[in-house]
Length: 153
Image (cartoon, rainbow, N blue to C red; front, side, top):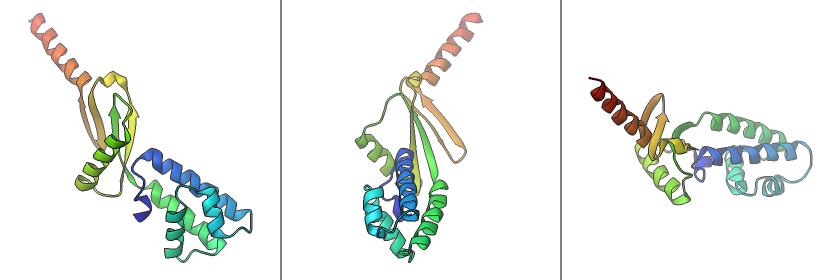
């Protein structure tokens, strides 16, 4: 989905959806030209949204609103890779993870980062019904659990 070429995270998707909502509201309530509405209501994604609307022959107001509603539905269905980390990732980290995920999972996947210092280090990852806890907290729990068992024997 070309509209997502600049969106890597679920947070970025939410920002795009907010801009789409603003465009729909502005289109419904004024006679301002489409391009002006996009520039004012969707400053970050205006060129991408305009290109999407033109590709879908959605330059007329009502058609544009319908196309944006359809786009929102498509965007809601984009799969997410949830990553729980002990830190807030930098842009560089996000870019590296996104590049790896794009190559290994697919280009229409978004990263959904959550911070949980309790995992200490590593990551907890879930995607498509799969779950992997590769956190230091889990490993330490397993080590101490094994030590307790050995002591009780």
